[in-house]
View 1: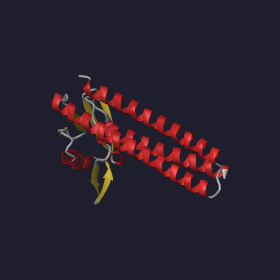
View 2: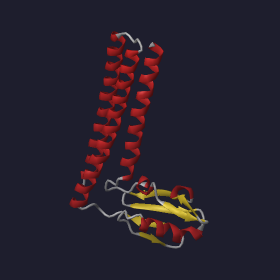
View 3: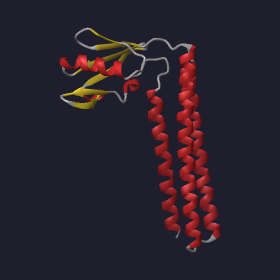
View 4: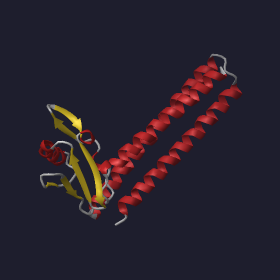
Length: 187
């Protein structure tokens, strides 16, 4: 029984960590005024008839805080890369010089900043919901184990551990959100 409880707690922590990792990836895609190669994560480029992630057909870097440079590994990819960025609706205008694609990242307007903060809060709420769902699933599983003969003190102890995990992960979400909001609102 104690082994089952330990496995349950470990799997709950894993689920909560996945929610946090997902939030981290999603927040990375939200731009915060400075140029960041992560802004282009998720952009797919047509490459020999199949859709391929941009990072697999070019190197992406930021020579300065307002510019993203995309160096395709094949010159013929400049057009498709430019097209993919325009179609992604990120509010970015690619510019190519025949060698590489440059994107000048314009400063964010106050209105756009507010809209991005809303998006950040929504992502944070989704992460909190995932964490709470993991807690609920764990507590339901503990109740089943109790019916199958798990001593009550072990159940209460395990519920306490699950709650501590929940509190820890929700606190991490809050820290990530406030850092991202600060990045967005800093002019």
